Image (cartoon, rainbow, N blue to C red; front, side):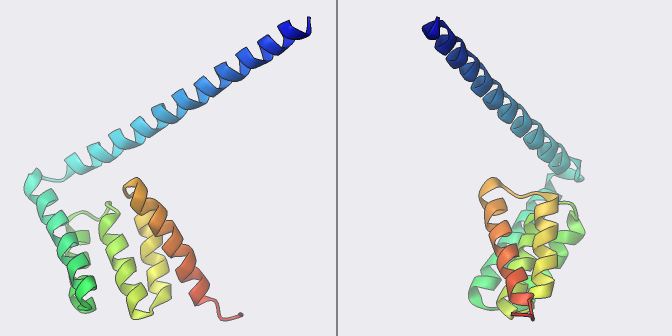
Length: 139
């Protein structure tokens, strides 16, 4: 009797684990499809290419210490597609480097809200919490 109960419990646990995996994959696919649809909404592929070129140039400017140029590139990219997160992430990095942590918090929050690739989503969340901690004056 105990062996049957143990078998049933293990069977149910396996079914539950399978459902969790199925649900995560389904949710992940839905998010990816929404992101793809949002990217396709922009008029023509030229806008998408220009957006990514501006973000890339902005990251290069941050790396080179040209923060004003990085802010200009992010502003232009946001003007092309205000509902994509990469340009906001770039803006957050730039403000973070400039020590304007309040502006960095706002930019990182926007980047997370509009969505980023998984690796950047995690990094943006970490940078958001760091910037928030640096804005605290009651420490």
